[in-house]
Image (cartoon, rainbow, N blue to C red; front, side):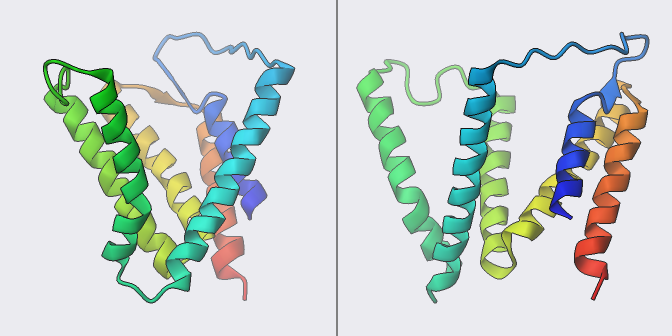
Length: 170
């Protein structure tokens, strides 16, 4: 099921959407350093997700208190970096309302993912992320008049099959 999710992500990223009348071809530039960094990112991301899930499930503390403990060091380090940079106009200098909306959206996304990881698993989190890619594509069609390609429908089929294999087979 996880390999199908990987195939869906690859299919979508290789051309699931394109602008009307835009070029159909795509050039991909791959370097050994890029592949090494990608593998390192995948390894660290997977390890951190498993470790975070283990931390959230190991303790009987309320989730809100666990989130405070988990995010405390990130907030402290970012606050220190902000003070060290010595901005004169303040913390929110250059932020438009749209940027604030994106920041709040990502913060809410992190809180939702912590609920999923506390009460379910990282596999469920991956299914949620895969489905969010599909929602993003459909919103892009509606808002920006982009066209869906065959690769988008391959991604949809892979995600549907992965969900069926993981949750439907007993």
